[in-house]
Length: 299
Length: 299
Image (cartoon, rainbow over all chains, first blue to last red; front, side, top):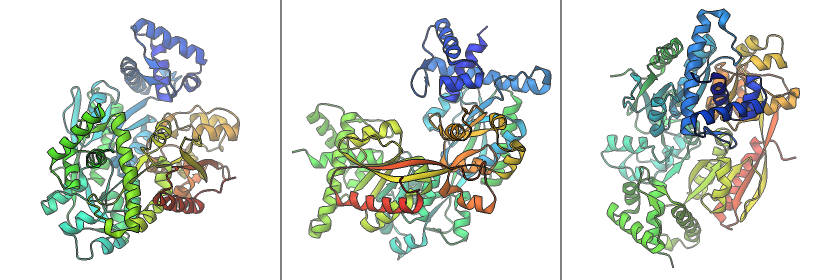
């Protein structure tokens, strides 16, 4: 059997981002934490943690730490059934979940808060880096993910959540300045557009689907969901913004659609480990309920 | 002399995140873009771009692309003086600026929008990754940065902007549930706290400075400035939130301070290349003006 106190030390160092903080959480000395991890490294025959600030796991370290977090999740459920067992020296379990930046910024958090209030579970939210999320799900580093990529991951269940609706929006002053004759190909080629990052093709996709030609326009890069909205409000450029974030601004006239009634829907999916853990099922229920409120139903 | 059409192709591929998009912006075929970059790589004797999706620069590629963006910035100023010169086949220059996530989320964008409206310059905002920003300033990859790290960077000028004020805040329901007897050491050890990422020590610093003991508490991880605020509003945990984001919520009673009148001020700095470029000076003026409005004056 694995040495669980050592595994707990490893998981705490990575979760807390430091040996001292891990020691404080575990109620032991930092040197005890170091010794446990060194012992584990000797047993495994590999470095588990790069001793940087903050410490970074090696592949083996990430795998072992993910295992520990899963075990603690299951232990947490056991403690609910057998309260006398709950020594809980380390406190509640932490569930790591990947979320797209736009979901985190527009609809996900109420579900997270309800789940956490009901179960006492802690959440470690990480931003969905499309490429990495599937790998992290596969090796158990995250137990669930809100993702725009429905590709099935082995050992995981995928369910459609509905679509996050985006609207092409800009400030009225921006529209008056850059589209005085209305929104057409020539004006779109000159009006500044926002992009989140190099992978963000939403604005180009909307132009292609609406006008049938590619978008090549002066571009501002703003790598933040709320920053995107703030930049649209401030008149820096036009952008595809999530409906839940712009509805009030549209109603108040602070933003307007480039072409009313031309949304772009991005289907989202909930992928989670087939762990059969009740906590994961409880989170799944809250996420699905919030998705029904905030997203467009799956086709 | 360097071959500038090739450099422009390289910079466009990296800026746009693809050969096809770069070709569209430059008004040439994708194969012409490829040929130019291959020619440049032969001349330099090194790979400049890793052909991934999106393309990623090698160190040499980043250095050359940064040089091209600087030259275009200076060209843009020349065109303002000598309008007949402005062939501007590639459109306006792009200025790459690093910004802390909390600054991008709370006060920076109005300055960016005013600067861009006045000069027509495009902005490529990148999030300040403390470790990398100094290196990126040094090699010219970013021309300016809002940073919490005042360490001087060679070739750069540093000026204090004032401090972003943070308040320890939570929802009234959260306070009633977790601090019924008031905020003390025992309650702080049990109440869930938010952290942005492993480097975020603000909550711990506030507890240390206020109570004189370290913070070890159940932690939710929420890697987004607005997500932090939303999670505070939803009652997931307490957190240090930037004053510009919480002022209205405090006034409306949706959030309350854990201990009224105990802010934590984080000094911010503006570092920019000593390029003598008027555009950079214009941006500096707008950033300084916005900082005077939104930040606490430097001591």
